[in-house]
Amino acid sequence: MTNNAKEQQEKIGQLQVIEHNLQGVLAQKQQFQAQLYEINSALEEIDTSEEVYKILGGVLLKKKKEDIKKELTEKKEIVTIRITTIEKQEKRLQEQAQTIQEALLQEMSAEEKVKQ
Image (cartoon, rainbow, N blue to C red; front, side):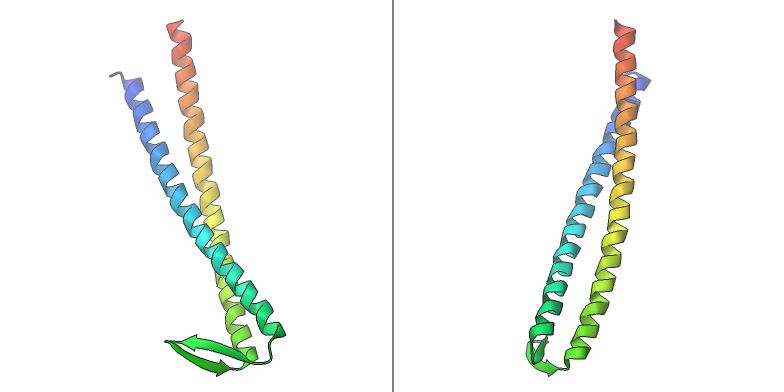
């Protein structure tokens, strides 16, 4: 196996690792988006409800509307920040994958030209 072929195999391996990491990041993003949807739904429901309850360790407790709303708003902020962070990580991984793909394509097309 030539040096060039070894380098290409290494790049393909790197690309596979990046793709695997990207899948994990996308799964996390999806989980946080689902949490955000649930929080938004709960906040909407609180606005239309007279009484608000919270489940705590298998026990249903009556809570003040304002307290629950504040708690959900804080959770929403945290989840939104996490989604933003994950999106930055996703973008970075996509850029890395694209750079490696472009380098591989250039090397492969250069080899084709040499063979011809």
